[in-house]
Amino acid sequence: MLVSFIRYARGFVGFRVIGRTPERFLNLCAQRGIRLWNSQPSPQGLQARMFVSDYKAVRPVARRAGVRTQVLKKRGLPFFVARYRGRAGLPVGAALGAVLLLTLSQFVWNITVTGNETVSEQRITALLAESGVRIGAYTKGIDTGQAKRDILLKTEEIGWVSVNLHGSRATVEVREKVKKPELEEKDTPCNIKASADGVITKITAKNGEAQVKVGSGVAKGDLLVSGVSVTKQNTVRCLRAKADVWADVYTEKQLSLPKYCVYDSLTENRSFRRRLSFLGLEVPCSLSFVSFPNAAYTCGSAEAYLNGTALPLGVVTETARELRRETFADTQDRARQVFDNALLLYEVFERGRGRVTKKQVTLSETAEGFTCACSYVFNENIAESVDFSAEE
Amino acid sequence: MAKEITRRLPRPDMGSAPQLEMLGNRSVTVEGSTGVLLYENENIKINTGRMLISFHGRGLRLRCVSGSCVEIDGFISKIEFLS
Image 1 (cartoon, rainbow over the protein chains, first blue to last red):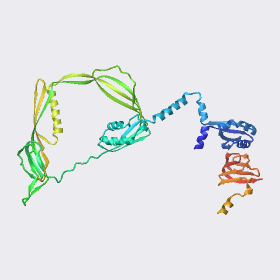
Image 2: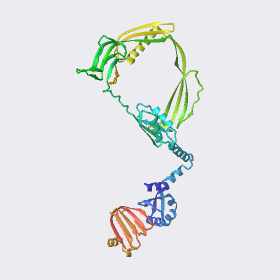
Image 3: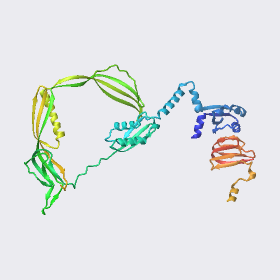
Image 4: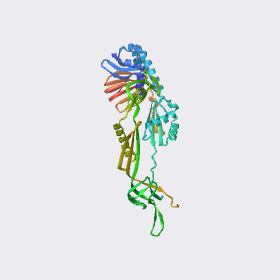
């Protein structure tokens, strides 16, 4: 391999020796220290190879040996360079390319974050940037250990992090902390109290003594199931009460909607401003003189990829879309529709544990807008565990 | 041990004789050659001054030729020493 490389670097010629005494040619070459290789006898003489520098000195040897030499092929770097001697741009371009590659390889081209589930990649990238690990940063000036410590100190959700530099790529591996599960109290005695006012419809006491009956009305904070029980021996035993207490709970919900509302809507008028980003630097590459007094701005970026690897080259496009202010007058039908949707969301997301047993909606219209008063009766579990000390 | 080494070494009075080193019948190195006299696929003749060594075989070729050393590759079937 090394010999082949040296031969290529110095350049060699394959040639044919034509004559009656090719052996004499071989001997003379050996005496003069001219190295030959791959020599093979042929019907007219022999074929061999030698360095191009030696071939220039072989002509007197051939004359003395009474043979003629004929070049069959030329290989190697000197011939390659000679072929492109007239084109100065090629070697200059190659040299500039090499310098550019060497220079750019000293900077971070892209950052890859893996292993994050709840912590966003943007947050981790921002923390890395604070520690000096950003696209375009000089790799020799990056302290990966400090970056790791900074991330661990600034985020509670991350339990382990590793920052590695592979050439121009920075890879960040993250392992998030596993949240400690909330353990159910088993030993502390507790009572079951009412979490809302209501009328009891069903009691399922799994542990403890029920203090109320079905049909009785209770106020918020009333004792429903006691965690204190009296044994047959007339001793008091404290235990952890456990029960489901279902009650009809009366609730009112008020909603309002203005009659006239002002909002901004997007129009089709838009303007683009593009910037060329290179190693974290952004250079404007388009001029846009269109501006809107009221506009919404969005920003997107497109990065260049080569074989799946992100290059530090991309285009950032900032789009401005004109906003038009409009006034809208609501009708009663539309207001009813809006209130119905809002009440449905309230029932599902805020009182999802209960069941609606009664619902009455009253819609009224005033000069300012519409109001909706809705009275509900929810059948829901109002049991709430309240711990107490056995010493009390 | 010392006697064994002495036995393996070439005799001092053979200093001007050519030294042949063979690797099976596929390669031979001749040290002390003074020139190649014949170069063919089936026959290569090497002059060593005192004698002429003739290698017969198939696909013979000179791998390296220098001032006093010749390396031959190929299937060697016969070696003749002509004086």
